[in-house]
Length: 224
Image (cartoon, rainbow, N blue to C red):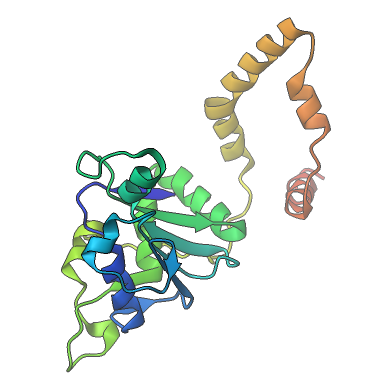
């Protein structure tokens, strides 16, 4: 999942400084920072014009959940020579999810049909940048005003480590019927003209993993 920052609310060097100085409440312990291609640098604003720009990673890349925040406009300038002044997207916040975290987020997305709400709810569960106050604990400090504006006041939290819901056969069938069936039919028509059957070859070569075998056993046991 990705959120595009069109207004420049995500100043990546500032977010990094707030993270390492403790002005952040987060479940994600690991942090990596790359400034103009160099790790853990403290460049000035002038250095923002150099190379690929700044990138902040929150969380371990080996975990099921980690975030990547980077200067999209600067990346586009470095790669394609595009002007930053004319850029539509200044920064990008990417949620990189795998395994159960990816599956649970997909379930939440299908339930809500709200990609932005799902993404912001996941972010809100894992990280919040704050305005530090000497007489308050970090958890009780107010949210940083720029972060709050970026989050659009999102308060809901979506836990991706929750216990997966029981498999719903009817819901899956409805999803295939409304989202997938037409594409499969289209492929079959095209492949028929080519004298081959890609869909059948695909299904024939697909091996179910342990999770899917358990679902088959769960559903079919109810029919016995």
